[in-house]
Length: 425
Figure 1 (tube, one colour):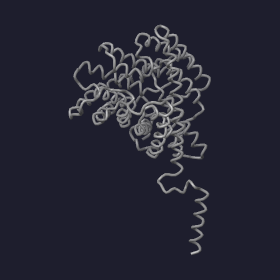
Figure 2 (cartoon, one colour):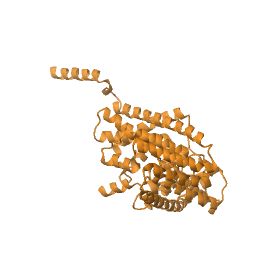
Figure 3 (cartoon, rainbow, N blue to C red):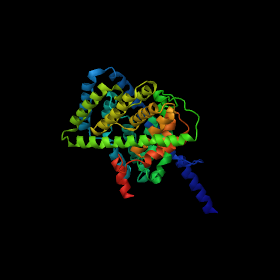
């Protein structure tokens, strides 16, 4: 009896000293940590987006022939920042660190990533802000986890949660952003890091809320696609057919990236000269086809509302893929998810002109899904992301399109570190 009473007294004292452990609900202090990380991620993403918007608005006044020297100088400036402050690396390095370095992303190169990516994106590069923010917020998660004494898989989970919160802030879909962070790391075994799913989801919800409050963006679809027609069984078969074009475009894009990467590797010059050359090429492309400038967030709405010939759309698609490839391989910073969504939309418009009378929204969303699934190997999360970003809620055709693009993807992935993981599993 005395032992039992002493045990109860000890438990009461422990509860008083550690109030966070006295929790009648499912989660404890970890939930608080995930939420705080999401809030920090939302603040970083919101601040980055506001600065990017203002900088982009200021630089849009430069048009015509002056775009060429502007982008060349911007490439030189971004290259010098990377040269002086450190190379933050590409997405392959980030994925490798998650897999093979205990899930740690180093924050020491975050100033270089933030400054160089802001220059590259705001001046008109064809990569978006998703990759820089994933690197910055993910490494912030690593820093917080290590300071609080977390080790092993807990550090990896918190890092992934930071990455997911960055994805979600931009894509506006907490569930899709969480799955994307897991899937892009290991598309064959998504449950490999399933322990990180709940931290990622909690952080994503907090991040999205803070991001919307800071930027004053509306909650809802990112783009206003034409209202979809009533769903029919035949939509599934059409979706598979459209996704064949999306998968083929994915092959073309990967081929372009590999060839341009080979070219820039042969240029034995410092990184700032490579970025200058890349900027010069991008400036020429933007001068002749202005819709290829920028990463496609605003341009996607422009092509949906515009009226273009099929010849121009074909040229726009090809040159946009070239612009994305040049941007990515010459050292310019940014991510290619949103730019590929723009390319998928242009492909959908081409198909719609070839086969008028079809469901335009169904065509474009299926092309977007197949193209991204083929390139990024994220067939599940892209379904949810596109449903949220386009307002196309009949996801069954998107599922078929995404899976078709995924299974028709080239055996060797664009993100080389995904292939390296395949060999170890």
